[in-house]
Image (tube, rainbow, N blue to C red; front, side, top):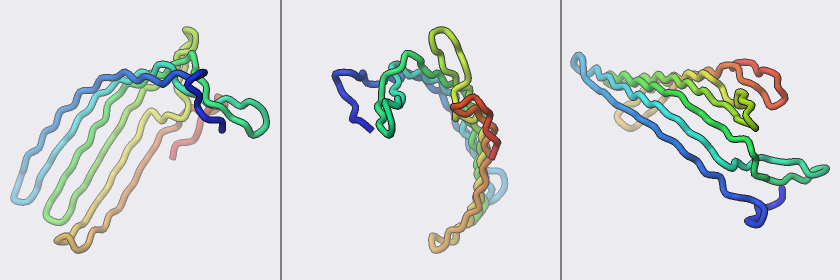
Length: 148
């Protein structure tokens, strides 16, 4: 990989906006609930992409295409005494704009779920169980990757 050159590369510029709100409450003795909702939009100008020069030599170059991503993320937390349950969902709508042609951004899952159950005993022991799901996503070669 050749180093980035200030003579031939411009720095990427990222523009974005997000908005979030949080809410938390208690129900019964020891049972707590909180939710965080986030909305986002991001655009990157002059992104650096990898270009293969020849053989095993690569160079980062600025691209005329630019990615946009927008979406939302929801995170919920339940806690009761020593147990905490985290549940999350992220929706990402990411596209590349290349000379007026818009296509889905490769390697970006549209849907992602995450769940974490944690048991913590007075700061002495912490055990967790995690589960994640990523939806299918377009690959760089135009094929569709499997969800996992």
